[in-house]
Length: 297
Ligand code: TA6
Image (cartoon, rainbow, N blue to C red):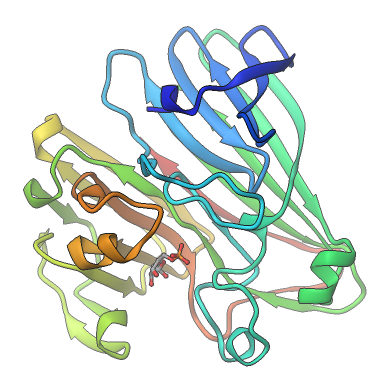
């Protein structure tokens, strides 16, 4: 799924992990574990690939995703932070949608590997660039534990003196065989429809996917199950620290409008996001931290 990127190794970080670059010097952390393959970019601490050997990939990456240090990557698990989508403030100040974490360069700080798993830790701390956008002191840590499944924990630490509010998402793009053959279970009985001015609507118990969808379900417990029928599997997503689950697929018109997704790219992806979307967000006091997590099996 990432072989088309034509990467060259610049540094071996451990037996199974290397730092690789594309022809423009864009940096990737490539993981070749005996039981699975995975890849991150340092740009955004973005998981762009995860596949257990002999299985279909779990995470979708657009074949035409752009690897550019100014842009967000289409696919994988974008770290949307410190706000979700656009807020009144981000619109009025012309700040980036879904915040700046996904377009910032992170550092990789810990790598621990066993015969079953690899744990990595990425960090991003407040700096001049982030302070010009969002004037708070913070350290953001993405802990990734990869084994026969994916666990991502985003820890927001307030290193300043004042309480701050944040929102965001682990905006996971799941890889499915055929979206028209997928259904979703485990969502709430009502949702806010972002395609219809956020109107509250009643949901079906088992959700079919037969058109564009951008829905916010105000749930923060239980499993969300994607029945990926043509892969003969169920993808189970378990979130914690969130206030909602966002379900998104742009469908054909949306895919055509994206420069970084093939026109048929919507057919093999489904976003199930561990999100903080409410206006009140999460308040983090000075010296305190909050964890937003997703587990994808
Ligand atoms: O999470 C759903 C959403 O906010 C949609 O409204 C959609 O625009 C999507 O994220 C992708 O956003 P992006 O900024 O990555 O194009």
